[in-house]
Length: 268
Length: 250
Image: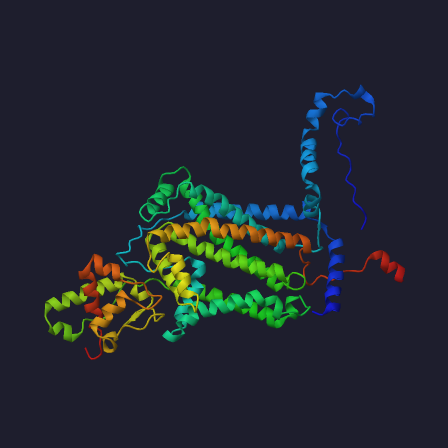
């Protein structure tokens, strides 16, 4: 493949000065030059102490295979939907009060009175639907392209764990507004968990914080929703992205590698 | 995949990768466009549909049909499709657990080297079937409205007991209709046949005391009516009276 060289930008000579000759200026440093170099020297300062430029280059300038198309943006779109949930969730948690007597009031305050409150809550609520859809689309792409096969099996397993955590996220978040719909749906949902074999009854007791729906149930759901599962999701996303970078994204399955042109000539 | 196939894949992939473009800026550009689309979708949904807040949760009234978030509809519908009570745990936990295990282990039982979807007929058709089944169940769940009307006529035996009994029967009918029972039970022409048993002739099978006991201590996943019994005993007894009149030959 011929190397593509970008033409030099057509800048006027004044903006594009010749580099200084060594020894010029007698070692005096022009403060203007220091200011010009501030960005580079700050990056250099951090890199001298962390050596992060190597990994950054490894992540950003790795090659993605030929034929990478729009289907390959679904994973990053899911990540972006998750970031949306994280940011809007932080703002909602500033107002939310996870006690059965005040939870509904705090959500009513967010919805009706807080500045842009309904908008942010709407983004969190609909963002969860968008995220679930994107998770399933990303998964369908991976499945139909056979991208879970060698050497990416482990990344598929992490992905399934992330799917389950996403569903658990929406199950625990559904109760938090504490209106009629969320309350009764969660009661039935927890009861359904209870019918499971072996761990079922223990799981629903754990979720309810006791045999009945009580005062601590809501704060337990809240802690699971905003501390436990997000922590697990962030950790697993980190592992998922590391493996994506390490192993590379797949090429579309119908693409065959053409032999190198130079090699083909030699064979002929 | 055996070792030869693995090495062949890795060789093939390294050629395709070498022929590719750098992640930055080419893939980053596409990802950024997609991120803008996602954000625009979420903002549009939020502005157009807003965030509704229903009435406050009230453990004493059960006048609400439990309805999960739409992407759980397919699980909820599974409960209706599988009717026999002894199979309910299978529907609630069994099928989802089996699906999850199958998903987790997918790379271990599908080890063929072929990746093109049209050359993996079993995998591709299984995937399409799963998506179609989930889509259909989600549609059924979305279409199944919460019925709040019972058209069951007052039985002759109740009319024979005088106007007081008829009044109590109608009061109970109203409580049952409002309590969302019909989301899972069938009474006469109304309601969904499952996951709960049909209640049209329930009094033939169990006496009034047993009905009251079941309402307080139901089998999962039915919610308990014990707080209704404490907070408004008249409504609760009307409910029991209504249900205990539902017998054959009435």
